[in-house]
Length: 278
Length: 319
Image (cartoon, rainbow over the protein chains, first blue to last red):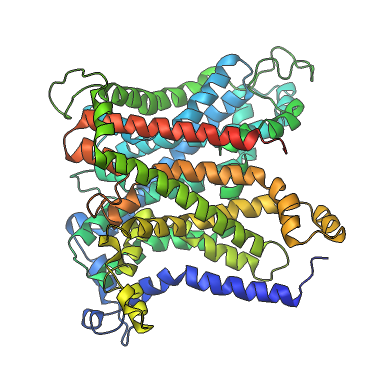
């Protein structure tokens, strides 16, 4: 019954038109970034550049000081990767234990994590900063990895706990009968099966950490180890309405995540919808 | 993500699950008492880290809400004074209204937009996956980058005003972000733009679960497009609606990055939200007690709406 008719074609064309309007900001982003300074005020914002060049990008990639974009890029990669590793390791084992345990405390722990997801971070931001500074976690990539791991851990545990709840215990029972120890069961039986949940955690946590501005601004404040959004913020702060340069750095900052998304878009979207369905 | 609290989905598979609830499995499956998976103490590092970073820090912050602490030095406990100050200060009351307006406005428009696109992409379209990818793209961008793009688009010399002038509507051109009346609407546009794709993906997943046969049967019985949507599709995607709106409201109530980059709360406080006010009071103005009190109000509002949303979508008689 649901066949491809003329009406479907019309619907398809309509949605493409909508998509083009929806993505118009990207058109302005790219055309403006390619305009040299001389064209910025002489061509219309709606028109593409007459003689596109990459001078803005060269300027962005060679900037130094606390708007050092290349270093920001490296720091962001290290911090994002480190946080993801921490979240997978701690999240999977904690989610596993609280979803497999049948005692009352495990349910309490589940709600402990659920409420922590919703708590707004600002209330604890200052006490957290003072605590982190006291034990030397501010100003370094390591400190930020630990902080992000702690901040996003409730989400990671929640996703893993829901995954394990939906997973039958048959394999684990069989392994127990075959004489495997509890740690063997986790590392050899459960760990290989939890890949879908790991994918969801990686995508969620990776996106949040990679894009986060506020936390790294505060906790890395004043140090030379800036993340990409902070480097972008400082770089843009030194430019007043020089939109071609601003957009060059905006493009540089979004290329890694956009490339990853387009490359693995199916996993991204599955991760989002699947992880949320629980 | 809170939709997993849905009792239905849990109950359906209960006998097969090693659930974390006392006595859930004992009768359904003759399991030996000794058959336990994992050691309970494996959960300790995770629990300790979450308690330290979330609960202890938030608890201390909550305590300072009742003090006149400036962020350094000594302080006095002042009781409810900070809260009384919030409800006497027009800027903070305005921030409260703005927060609610932006959260509900962006959730409503984003969900309706996402639902329309999801319905449009549902079934038989040849390019549905390409279109889905395109509509989802804004979701992966950082709020900071998104805000900078839109700041240019709404700039006085930016594309919107140039476009309006070129079609002869030049008198509509205005400094959108600096106009006290329009600034909040521009922020709303940006929030909707970056959240529509997210709602769309959740609705598409929900729509994929609606059986074709039921829709066909309704069509054969003579139900028109609207009736089919109202009576077949909508009830089937209610869980998806619950997830999309709950998440959207929780996110919308906390909105911070895009506003700081777009308007910094200006002009004259027209786009101030609770989150930006908390930041300004606690970090910029040295009024940590007041900022903490405001953050506590924000936390209570978020918890209230998250719970209310769950209740409303769950206790519907049609379910």
